[in-house]
Amino acid sequence: MPRLQPAAILAFLFVATLGCGGGASPDRGVENGSGVVDPTVETPVDAMDPAADWPEWRGAHGDNVAVEQSLPEKFGEETNVVWKVKIPGRGHGSATVVGDRVYLATADEAKQTQSVLALERETGKQVWIEELHSGGFPTDMHAKSSHASCTVACDGERLFVAFVNHDKVHVTALDLDGEVLWQEVAGDFSSRFGYAPSPTIYKSSVVVAADHDEGGHVTSWDRESGALNWKVNRPEVSTYASPVVHTIGLVDQLLLPGARRIACYDPESGAERWSAEGLASACVGTIVEHDGVVFGSGGYPEREIMAVDGTSGDVLWRKRDKSYVPSLLAHEGHVFMVDDKGTARCYDAKTGDVSWQERLEQQGDFSASPLLADGRLFTISEGGDLCVLAVNPDEFELLQKVRIEDEAFASPVACGNRLYLRVASKDGPRQEWLYCFGE
Image (cartoon, rainbow, N blue to C red; front, side, top):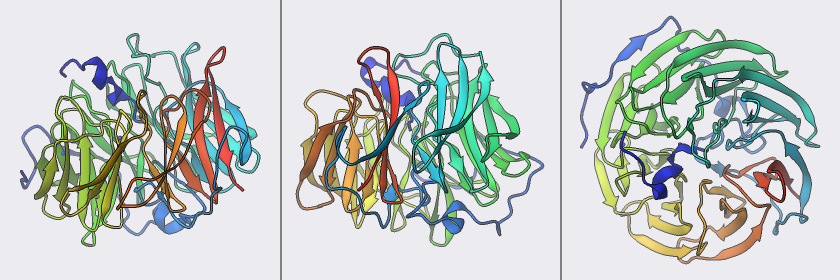
């Protein structure tokens, strides 16, 4: 992997996330396991109410759009706060909200432990915390990184999380009471910038990505048994994006950026369907889909945002802009970006033309991905400035900008008419908080 320059080292955070060719390329292959993906099993999209629950990274539809929400007009450290609670340890993963619980991945850097935490949804009170790993943390880790950067996935019966420990990616399934059901090693992992991808649920499987400079891999596991369905080998490049499944032209597509391309796989077999050359060596943001077109941006060292036909892999347009860590967001014919330096942009999804752009922060970085909820865009800077924008393709409109504690890397989450923010205060020893906002 090329050495990342200081301005580009945000790639490890997520925390949080690409012409066209047919068939598998020489640097990858598919290894079949003993598991079988059952196409009849419901996904969280089918089994849960997307307005009430947020079951995985970027929500039930994988688009970071919170549907049918009614949120407060204003926010603040003491404004419309339903509850806020201290979170032990440190992590950059967003909240997962299903049923009457909220789940978070967290790590205690002093004790070198990695855990999953459950809170009561109504009060924020801790229900349980389950330690999954002890020791084995990398000795060389950038100060902005986290040992718990992934967002927990939940299928309504089980929780799924991936951690790097002792230089290997461990995939763990727990029940809703915190009991470990199974734990498997997906493969080796070597990167001094940390591990960021979140697991994604597809039918009866859970998919985990792990790109790194000694040879990456994507694996699919049976959710119930932990049996390996398939394993795809990836190029020897460190990149950090989460896989996502979108249905395009009635076909389910597993999409992943990085290693200078957007790759599309069959989520049931792992076979590659198409690959579009572009983006960057290292990518973090998750691929976005809208009206059959997929959008990606990255990263390091290249600088690009691109649109690709989701059925063929044909490149539709490219621009010399980039959002390295924050993912894009597509909505009603437009693509919204808040880049790492805090510049917000709106693109026409068909042409790539910029409708508007404006700087949210004169100084300060952004790692969180924008969320669309209740007709507004929500994002938060690394310094804790919550920015609320109107979803207006014609002009930029900042509705509110307010400080929520001192630090934020996790992306906002909204469901059940509540907004959840994972932040940290640094007045004294660093302390993480989870805020729940509502009327």
